[in-house]
Length: 77
Image (tube, rainbow, N blue to C red; front, side, top):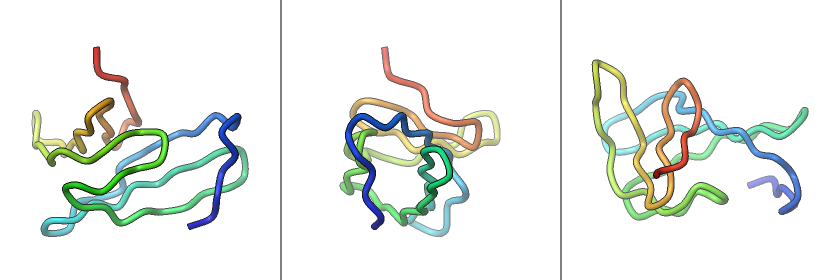
């Protein structure tokens, strides 16, 4: 995976869920990488993947500290 420096502001977006894996795009400025993740994987800056949930017809990647959807990432309260 291409590395991002800790001071960069990262944006996360769920691309799709395929069987038991998710494709998550991570962007910063002009750089973008796509991670294929499954339950238990760690998404840098977003946390460990706990599960995939479908809410109101949309998939969500739930991590221990955030939720990532096709609309982007939200921190858990």
